[in-house]
Length: 335
Image (cartoon, rainbow, N blue to C red; front, side):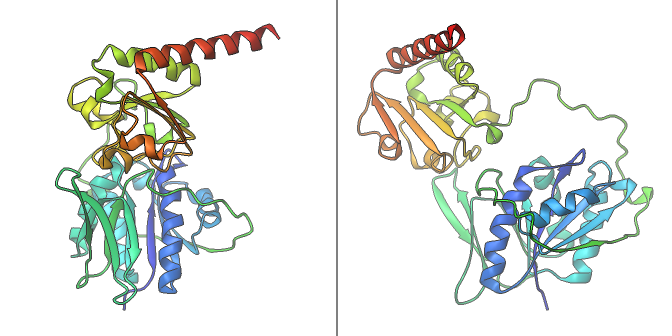
């Protein structure tokens, strides 16, 4: 009989990825509804010290698969390790972060376990009657939200976008079981040999980690307008992002897109410039702590959810904000 809610905890170079902690918080909610326990599965090499962090954030048990062949991520190595344990223990549910690694690993694990996988989920819940996992994700280009069940196969699996759920507060008084598990794995099991790791070929910024985001939409009008938004972001110590319309127009890179077909963000401050606020965009940023919207149209949907709505031309409003910020910084330096 299948039992337990599992989170595949992703770490890179011995550092836990934020999405793993986000998933633990949601897994805790799901497990409570099922009267079940949460298990974090941690793969890597010399990473047992991360186990307590997982327990502090909601795991009841941590399964540590520590092997030198798992030091660097490979599809073959991690799939074999996770599936070997899953086949032995038969979890009810498995959550994986929809990162580059998770999107590669999830389908392979699901296929090996002969079950389904709902990818890029933005919502998770339990059906009160059937107790099946309800997995919600954007469909048809983000125009509708589809809720999917996997009633006939176990485990129920989903990958979940980073930033969708909040990180639960760490409770250093929580206790849990840490179990180190050995698996049979050899170099022959891994068909890909890693010769060199290149961290980045160009500057890469993860907008899901930003505390301040200045985001532009169709109302910016052109690519040059994003230079002004970057100046504002720099003054605030933030980064620039954009709506799908801005990305489709080629004004900003795809990896900086906010929304259902982009990334979900939860910054402390989100400044929306020339963004009307279609439901697809709101779904990716409405959980921001404080939202400032600047738009000519006072009836734009984003104005209704903004904490501060400024009706005006962004090319008049934004330069004034930048001017005031610079003046404030200068006054602080003089003092």
